[in-house]
Length: 448
Image (cartoon, rainbow, N blue to C red; front, top):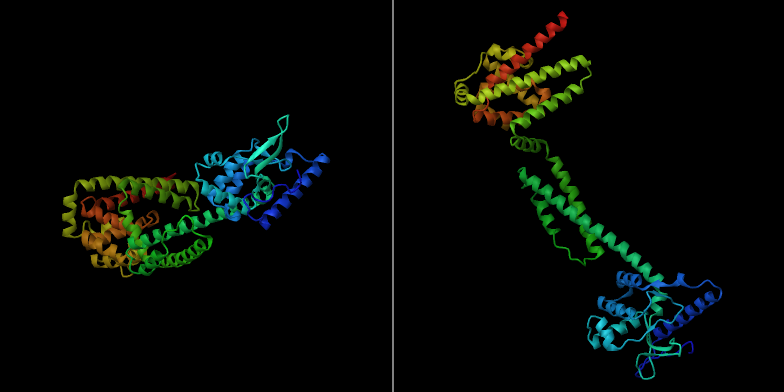
């Protein structure tokens, strides 16, 4: 067989320049492989796994300009090669009939089959080796070896294996970057929606209306085949919007956040409230640079006070109606007894606490100092009564270091008072008991 045997197509069709060049590349490559074989450096290292090569072709189909059904036809052609490893130094001509090729191409129609075969030839992946009558067949020698074969030459495909793998690697990197970009878009959409929803839940829907409209404009569906530039534009626009929304949300967190957090704390159970207080007390004690014995003493005192308050709370829940009537009547306890239980409020009454009016003025000052919002204070005065609300503020002042959110704590007590589950009397008794125990510990320590 000559070096350029059967390169012209059957049926009077002209020889394409590209096909002639591909044939020349195959001839030169084979000559190089033959030279290596003569030097003992050829063989299995140049062979290519046909199934891995087909996978690489599938991944690189965009770079190669192949449709998915064209790859199906290529897979059918490759399946007619009996060896798994395709060696470019050997003849790689397959010669299936149209009927058999159609079966392996999932029953593809003959006209469609011819169109995709032409696409493979134009892509430079196969060569036609047509016989004199256009039939595909092989002639064999007496020992069964193929002397000549006419059909489709797979040598161009195998010789371009390295190039195809490079295209496939590029396609994998691009697909990975595309997935990351699409993931960024999804996360931005989710986070922005969550921030807008949080702002609406906090009563700031009006100030975020413009953001919501812009967000809706960027929330359109992205198709599976959305290109890189479209995704990048969407990502950049969402990132810019997110920066603006986060700044607006953080700028408005001062009072709105406090009220929202306090409202959320209303839903906590009473036992969780006690547990949080104990945890806060431990944190405060641990951060106080005092001696170990002093820390232990304060811890015992705090536990005793908490236990007394819980006992007082249980007692107050049993006398709800009586407590509410006490609130309606006015002061729950004498002023001097209240100041004995809550002595720190005297520091906020420069002129002294001669009557309940002075006490309520001092409570107003303490309320502002503790960061209790005007709404929470007004609600407490409305539901507890003016004096009892002031007493509650004084009691909170005594335990300010152990209470994380005085405003939220006052709101919880207000709700419990409305339901008859809270009264200032047990709270004051608990504070008095804690102070008396503290004094007793101090006297025993001095006597020791």
